[in-house]
Length: 299
Image (cartoon, rainbow, N blue to C red; front, side, top):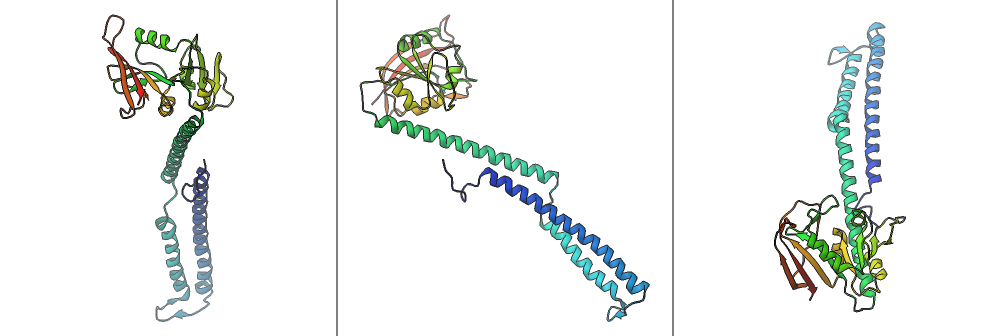
């Protein structure tokens, strides 16, 4: 990613500006201090010369020794200098320093978040581009997920519910196939899923996963699974969002309830997807929540 400097100043530029501003304030205060010392010392010398040694005459029309007139004019200049340093410019005290640090941290966080969004967007576009460049096959890329009514997937990298029939449903569908997932999803499991080819997507270049194939993009994961007639994408949220553009089918377990979560499944646009099968499951002694198995296919 490249950003034009005039439109998006870098973090380093912001830091340099803050340091330069602080150095400039120090120089301003130092010059005011020297000005004040010069005012006291030189005026003391002039008083000694003018009054103590009786050098010089009284200046009309004020009727005061000339040294008083010089001191008065200089005092006006010193007051103007003081006003410029402490009033015209903001005083660089503790409050100023904390405000600048807060500003810098806010800029850094906003910058990092923007870069992250841009990277995610670029990865999604790249995956779509690479996928559509591949010759079309009979392969059915299927997304499989258990999702609540408010689209919740999980919290703290863990499932929110435990539905034994859903786990059996997942196992029966994915057994013998490639299962494609993000790194966090893989790490949330005790080990690689047995009787399946685990494919892990991560941007970490040196990442290794036991009993799994590691790739750097969704497009690469699909290439790894090209011999599989029905590879499954099993999470997490970011991978699901990217896969929405290339998947042919969605095997969804709709859990009937709303839950607090930090990971969510993307919206299913019914202009693009149509429901082709549904099976209802009420609550019972093994299931605290009612749920439905739903299959969507791309129109």
